[in-house]
Image (cartoon, rainbow, N blue to C red; front, side, top):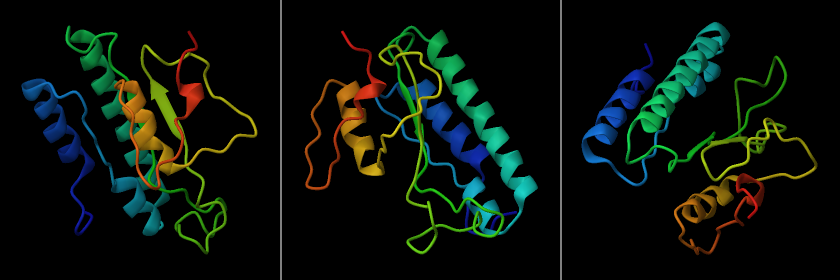
Length: 158
């Protein structure tokens, strides 16, 4: 249904089988259907795809919590690669000319993250913080020319 885009179900189940078979320390999923449906202005399909992505994340979390290698040692970081416009006309687009498209969100689930629910405040976080934050969860230091700072609220204070 989406020319040039692999269905998210295929992306998920290929990656999920890889996870079960190879037990990697890090696994990255990039889902694309919601973006394509939004660009096409297909709001109902966009919502349906988001619903299925939520189910994939739930299935992934249930698996890692049932596997002795991953249980209570695994963190899921969920984010988007860009924001979108926030009104009826611009929600289909993103980029420099679209207001608020620079804003993304993070969701984090894992043993090292406080269970605070939705966090609201004046802070803004950026995509360039993802790599350094992911590395910190692994006990590593990521250094790069354009790396942002670790998103500290994602970690429990000790």
